[in-house]
Length: 476
Image (cartoon, helix red, strand yellow):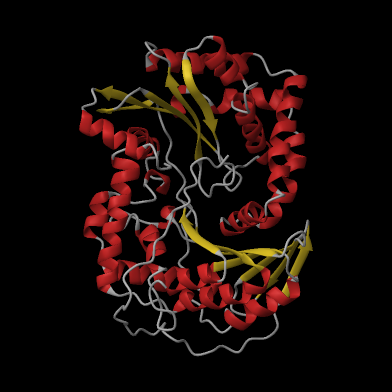
């Protein structure tokens, strides 16, 4: 599941930037040949340009529209202490103009052509996208290629946008008790994994960030050999590849640093953190360290964890809803979260808001009881079949959306798993057995790998209550 994916609204402002000159501005064209067709499978046609850029195309002729996405292999997990948040800051700066298209013009041109555009930064990637009529695709590719290597990184614009990011952090994290609790959970749960860092960055790092931090990050990571173009919609794949070659093919490459594995250090007992903030209700997060597809020695375990997530939190008939919300009424909200496609070892998380007069300790005990029940008795085949059908159905429904289909193959390619991984999903999920569900619960849901974060509410005054209500309107 990918519950914590944040789609950020970018507003391009302040026209008239002061341009800087760098070796990356207006690069000398490279000699480019025809795009190399790599593979066609499961509706995806793959190409590669001479400079290493991947092009993935999904032809869908149901409506004359197209989704265009450019994915970069860089995000919050690539950062190091002192510059956390730089990927997200650079995402904002990508809308601040180039010598060819000054600040604000990118968004204005897309809107004038009836399109919508946005961007988002995640732990393992940063992506930019447009939804537009199919006869306007070339316009999108031309402008994306332009800002890939020719961005005007002006210091005054950087300082303005940095303040925007700081305010975003205040509104979406610092003033939202549940979001701040989640941030503290990650900081404690991971000892040396980059997942301990917030995507938006620590405020202390934002306070000390400089324009050179952003320039270095841009020069290093924003290059065709570190990017994938995904196009889905009413298009011809060969024509898309030719357009990509026309605009992205001449761009110079960058020397991409080798990423160390950064495997999470062993944990030797339950870790706990209490966050005391003015809030309306308590909040509980429990997380168990688990592998993901990119780190697992046995992929079958990962798919068993995926199905287990559906068993616990797969709609109103799932165990957590049935037993803790409607049954015992211990919780007003409860769920499970697991991302099998992450780059690094992750956490299988259980989240709950207790009912009135119910303590976080009581909810924790109830959640552990649900886990113990699975550890002691595997689910019936009938229950498992229902869960698998729901899990598969949710993935099948995603195929109806060009945007989310492009999202799926773009994220898989960018995290190093390869877009082909999506083809094996249904088959691997269907192969999960009740015994495998029980085995992964026994192996990974143990106190030695557990981290618990509790939001302990303090009284709300009127000012804090107003801020909390405002913060509730934003996604975490």
